[in-house]
Length: 482
Image (cartoon, rainbow, N blue to C red):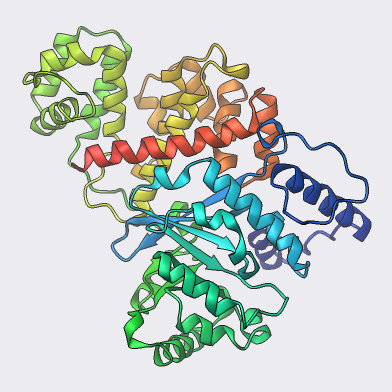
């Protein structure tokens, strides 16, 4: 993120790079606005000076990528995701007219609805970042009320004090929650924001803009002005960058947490697991070396935990077997060598009573694995075996989970050569596929587009496959916790 880069430059005594000339910025802003107009035309919007025929959204190669950031609750579980457009697009909205904000919000809502994101989330919440000016957007009616939360972020234009209460009352009547994004500048610019926040369901705070006393004073002000019939106000801490910040907000009563501290390498603590990882790696090597399945069955049967987990997995409703499987020999016959390898590899991510970091990493690793697997047979990956891409995604985060360096892990496992090379950072198709997955996760729009083009993949399809992979990962996690 740009603010992090600037922070580290200041820390190292470096000056941030000079911004591009105003005419270059204006040209890029106009181009991005025209792209948005093609993807999601805003009703009654003034046409651009030189209009050009707009292709259908499905045909647009410049599809705007929406960003997804996990939101954690006090139980250290993923409570939902915060959805917004890329950060560099949001930065260009600063000081812009209300019409442009509405165009961006319209594109975001269209993307959320077309990708059926709410169905993938299940019981989790979708926190959706929009401007209060977009509360009249008809696309809001298509969002399911039970797991949608509109997080309202005012811009420099004045808030409509006459219209807002009616719109917010309509949301509450539908059963849809809403909240306000607060920072120092917004509170100074909009004095009515404190009163509006007391009537909301959620408040999201930019942690870096307030000290501890200011946050405590803000919490007390909003709590005292809140009607008892509304229930407690839910507080979201944004942009947490360390475990200390997380713990500080946790002790301060915040209910939800966001930030890049989840995947940082700070304070590695290998998660607890019932799984014998040494045996698991041994089984992977036996499967790769074409060892007889009866020998592998003996190894699994000797471990009660592995035996229980394999039979539970195979007899879950997802398989729909007419008769339950009761022996490991038969289980391996039903699974086959490749599917058994896949199941054993998943055991490396079996975490017992892990904290927020482990849970998010497991979900991210599974999502990455299913996403890369779905790319098999497409574009430049036409000949890549899907199981190789799956293992590539899964193992690419194993170092973070178990606290060992990647090269040390690879010395203990016999992975396919392209996977081994990609995990070590060596150039190739597998490496490009992994970089594409990482660019999506890091919300790097330009890198995502470049890598998708390099692999001859359609940008919109890449986004859809990534969202579907999230749903598959959630299904696997639910089976594992059944």
